[in-house]
Image 1 (cartoon, rainbow, N blue to C red):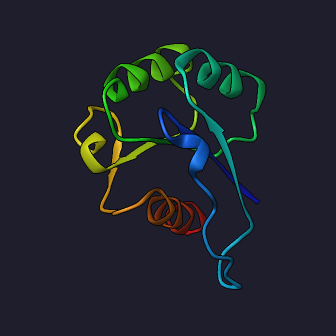
Image 2 (cartoon, rainbow, N blue to C red):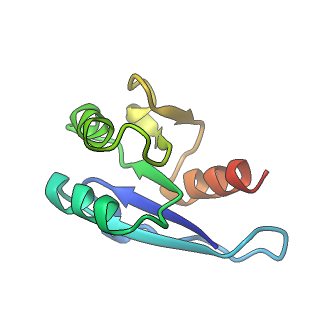
Length: 108
């Protein structure tokens, strides 16, 4: 099981996408605001990766996540959030594509 936290405005509409027999099971957790995101990260050590939603505040959110837990899960972004320092950029057109790319990377 790979758990991805979709973080930021619009995260509540993100799903794991289509199931595939070639990839592990995927759970997508969501959190929309900074406090909720940091709380979920602190309470759920099973989170394997964070996917930042594009939009205003993504850079500040990435900084807050790293400040709270520098050794935490890797942070990814797609869309206009892909240029944030310390965040792994994904060439995706949707959150579902971004999650599929994260799963592929984490599953090896």
